[in-house]
Length: 195
Image (spheres, rainbow, N blue to C red):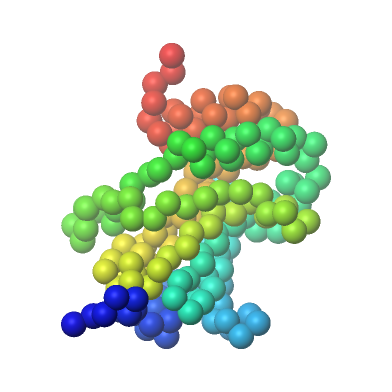
């Protein structure tokens, strides 16, 4: 019987589950150490993002993994040079307040749609200007929903960031206002009708 506070899955097991999943699905990755913490990095080819790429890092801490999916250096440079970051922050605030998407296996055959994780999207404050989706994932969740977690990390987050590209970078380059981007997210991501 499990005692209170006892973890079901260990950090080592979580790393193995994710790397095995990535091997089976032919997803390239690099496993390294970052200040003594295991770090898994990968890049995804996407349709809309600057450079047609989003990248991800997963840090495996003691009891929790921290997953970040972000635009490549090309996107960060657009953000750094933009004079419209205030509009971006308004859009990101809206996304954090309203976008809670359910994710599923794409076919509906392995598992139903769910809202197991709630990512946050933001612009980093370390002078890198990365626009990133970050999620903290306790290993016990990983044990309960291993396929859902791997799909979330390798498909859902990169796809969501790619789907938000036109609105995010439309605001950053001044082609659309934050209000127009918010209406677009309501229509295209949330499925709301224009009023």
